[in-house]
Every structure is written in structure tokens, then in C-alpha cells.
Image 1: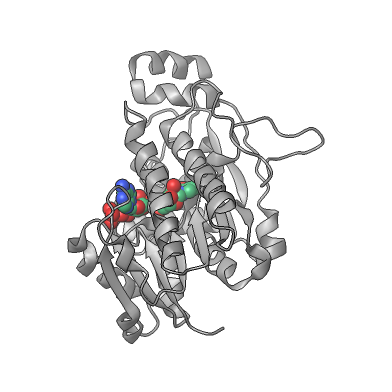
Image 2: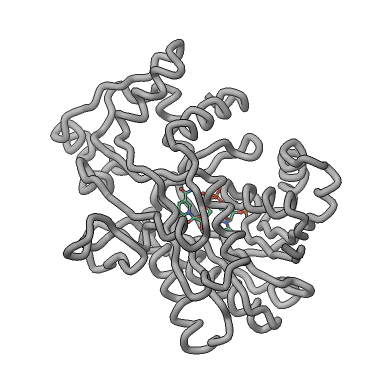
Length: 342
Ligand code: NAP
């Protein structure tokens, strides 16, 4: 593959660090954006520690860009050949005002896409989510959600984050169809992403494992989610750039569904000294708790639901062979221990 210059927005993020790492490793030049350039030194340290050759870090440059502000975007794409847009709020707790996450997600996606197009770029990959896919019934005759499904935002009780991802992805497809027919767009729609972080900063999804490792909850709710390794998700973004078959397509990134209790039991078996609670609470107890603990309320409709998603298109079209998720869970937990985060 010939090397290229890629602008990765939100490069300080959990997933974007892995994308940057793999791109630098492959010899690409990376321009990474952050809202806060004081994070650059820590990012460089984390990437350096993971690169096969520290000299590859010379191919990284950082710049300040904010999803909610026009400053810098018009000049950002000078010499850039492709955009990977990951920057979007991923709140650990949902805000009271949904617009707090919806506006930066939607405006940021459009701001990045439009600025890239105006600068002459014709290729972008964006990190969407299965949040934009799964809040709708599975189609008759299908066993799982796939890339043809779209979340139905008229459903009651959906989280602001879910709305933000659905609206941002829709906005980009609609803009591309109406105003930018030459822009070749690919969406990556990951399930819950886990895997060892690059450096000691973790994204909201790894908090799920961290909380289990910390043994904070004596009993676990009957919740579950499909999981995927962050290194596979990063590879999908970069493979999509290489493959014309990926243009105009969505790709779910998902390997395997896990119940919370099952993850806890696996972790407890792998780290017996850690006393990780594995008992699952009855749904009625969780419902009662949720009456008093507001952040739990959004989870009530998900109790006992098994959300099947089909991530096989990424294997067929992008050649992704998903990593073994049992191993990823253990590696993530070990990384949390190594970084003294648990
Ligand atoms: P993360 O670690 O929180 O990274 C997101 C990055 O986006 C942050 O480092 C932040 O960079 C940037 N950002 C946030 N709000 C911004 C704003 N208003 N303007 C500009 N930049 C902003 O999250 P992540 O887990 O890596 O997620 C990355 C992407 O993957 C997101 O689009 C997310 O929705 C999607 N995704 C994640 C998962 C998952 O399980 N983690 C699953 C599906 C989809 P600065 O603070 O440095 O500006």
C-alpha cells in the first residue's frame, strides 16, 4: 500500500489512538485533532511506547479543532488525502439536556465532512455506532440486526447518545447524497468496544470492565451487549480506506454477545485474587433501584434483552478476522491492572 496523509479527528480518544497507531505503524502520515493541545505530550508518550520504531512518531502532527467551532477547519485539510472522523461525545453518564451530545455529534460530523470536501478531499470514514442501527425490530426472516437497519428515534426512552449517533450518521449520508455526490463515505458502526488502551486513558466503554474489576456492584443487572476488540475496529477504519468496495457502505463491527454476569464470571476465574462479584440481581430489584437512581433509568428497557448484531460483512468485504473476545476481555483487564486503573 502507498503511504498517505490522514486527518483523524478526536485523536486523543480510545479508538482513535489505535487508528493512529496502526496508521503510523503502516507508514502513513497522521494529522490528529484535539480540542486541547496540552494533551499532545501524553498522547505522544503513549503512542511511542506502542510503536515498533519510535521514529514513526515523526509522522504525527497535532492540531486544534472543535466539533462546535469553525476555527481551523478550512485550513486543516491542506495536503490531506483522507478523513477519519471519530470525534464525538461519548458520555459515561447521559446529560439532562440531550442537545449537549447531539449538537457536537451532528455539527461536528457535518463540519468535518464539509471542510474536507471544500478542500478537495473525496474520501472519508466516520465512526458511527450500532446505536444508529439496533433500536428497531429485527427484520422478518433475519436473526440479527445488520447494516440495513436504522434506529427508530420515535421509540420512547432512547438515550441522548443513541440519538446523537443516529442523527450524525444520517446527516452525513443526507449531505453526501444532496450536496457531495463525489465524496466516497464509509461508516463503521461498532458494538461496545473493549481491548487494551493505548496509554492510561480509557474510553467510556472500558469503564464497564473497570467497574466490574473494581467490584463496585455487589449484584449485577441482567444486561448484556455485543463486544468487539478496539484493534479490529481500528483496522476496519483503515481497511475501508484501501478498498473501493467499502465506499458508500456501512460496516457493523461486532464479534460476540456477552451478558454482564458472564463477563464477571470470566474475569473472576482469570483474576481469582480480585473478588469480583458475579451474582445477578432479579430485574424487579434493578427496577426498584432505578426509581431512586436516575442514571439507571435508561437501562431498565434493556433488562434481559439480547441484542444480536451481525458483524460478518466486515469479514466478507474488509477481510477482518475478529479477535477472540474472551482473550480481549482478559487482556483489557490486565491492561487496567498494568496502568493501575483498578
Ligand atoms: P473517547 O475516548 O471519548 O474519544 C472521543 C474523542 O472525541 C475525545 O478524545 C475528544 O477529543 C473528542 N471529542 C469529544 N467531544 C468533542 C467535541 N465536542 N469536539 C471535538 N472533539 C470532541 O471515545 P471513543 O470510545 O474512542 O469513541 C470514539 C468514537 O467511536 C465516537 O464517535 C463514538 O461515538 C464511537 N463509538 C464508540 C464505541 C465504544 O464502545 N467506545 C462504540 C461505538 C461507537 P478531545 O477531548 O481531545 O478534543
